[in-house]
Amino acid sequence: MSKRSIDYIKNSVLVGQPLIQIISYEEKRIENHIKTLFQQLKRDQSLMFWDVNNGLVTNGQIVKGTTDPIQALNYIIQHNSPGFCVFRDLNPHLQDNRQLVRKLRETYRTFKNGKFTIFLLSPDEYFPIDLKKEIDILMFDLPDYAELEDLFKRFLHSMKKSGRIIDLTEDQMKNFVIGVQGLTLDEAYKAFLKAFQGKNHITPELLSFIHEEKKQLIMKEHVLEYYPQRFTLDDLGGLENLKDWLRKRQRAFSKDARAYGLEQPRGFLAMGISGCGKSLASKVTASLWELPLFRMDMNLVYSGMAGSPELVFSRALKTMDSVAPAILWLDEIESGITDKHSTDSASSRILGYFLTWMQEHESEIFIAATANRIDMLPAELMRRGRFDQVFFIDLPTRIEREEIFTIHLKAKGNNPKEFNIPQLAQITKGWSGSEIEQVIIDAMYEAFNENRKLHEDDLFVIFGASVPLSTTMEEQIKHIRSWAHDRAVKASPHKEY
Image 1 (tube, rainbow, N blue to C red):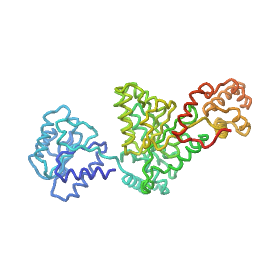
Image 2: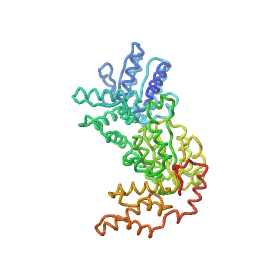
Image 3: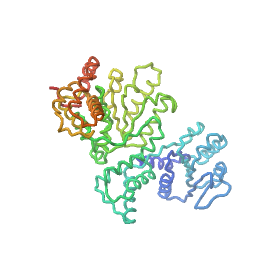
Image 4: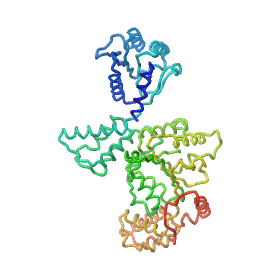
């Protein structure tokens, strides 16, 4: 929270810490907080700002001959009066200027335990090892809910002044404020402008404009991919236990949930048979909870294209932290996060980092993980507390197959009432949802080539020429079911009959 960062700065100032590095892209916001702190202390102090173009500026006046940071520091030391000075983007100058580093160390000794504080404000995390013991470093938190709520109210007020009244319910307002969490104030305001451009009323797609702003941040990380919200619970056949679990956590990231005493959910692992809806469940979760969905491609992480796998992976998780609240989708997690390699391999180090992050991260990131090969999953990953729940997704039952046929026939422009759905479901025992979908697609190609509507007989022809996965992978499926029997919650309450 922002208050935590502000309190840290205030405490450092009060104990006489002369050098404080603040890492943030929000220069204007941080400076406003520093100005507020300056006023709160109610001392006879000076407030100065420095940048490479103007040099020192105090009380609106430029101090000549101070564009060189060493000259600026000499000026501050010579005057030796209580106050604050904000140095903007000084960090890059420290990388190859040993004289400047030495001057900062001298400045530290001059003002140690005194009443003058120098703030080094920059998005650059670099700092010289020489200053390690002298400087306080703070990664300034992104705007909290209260700041973003205030920003949104000011935005609505500005719209009202321009003659546009946007009528929102309390829940709708909360959704928009939650939607921009993880953005800077400038990014959030820009997202509001785009969302309400030319609109005076709420439409379902407005939140997508908010998520698009988060997509811009993700695009800078080549191993993360943004997935637009295209699926709803109605697109997911069966799996009622999983659906019910998701519905009950629909408001899990709201301020009301925190006030009630609930902690944010950390994630679920959907494991089971390929083609039965694990990946679709991740996409549906994002739509139901109205959160952006980002998929991490572990193949790209290990490719080395963006750097060492461990560095790329940790940077991607930090990026996810910055766009929270959001959902991180790890598809086939066992292929990238595993312990089935040598102890000194990148995968082992990534596993260790990921386990620590899962346990310790405070950002509102929900992990939607899927797995096919359960034998590749590390025992540590399955420990209670890593995921809120582990679901086993089996082959669909007859009732679920009826629902799947109805969904896919309707989605592809066919009238389900023209088909004997119960019969189709009966003869496809042992078929996965994706296999049923593919049968419909193949049959439609046959009908399309003959310039006619799809008939039920077309489906029977494809059935006769196909072998389901449950037949070809019978032993592996038995192994999966045996493993999941007392280790996971069944995603479906139904039984085959």
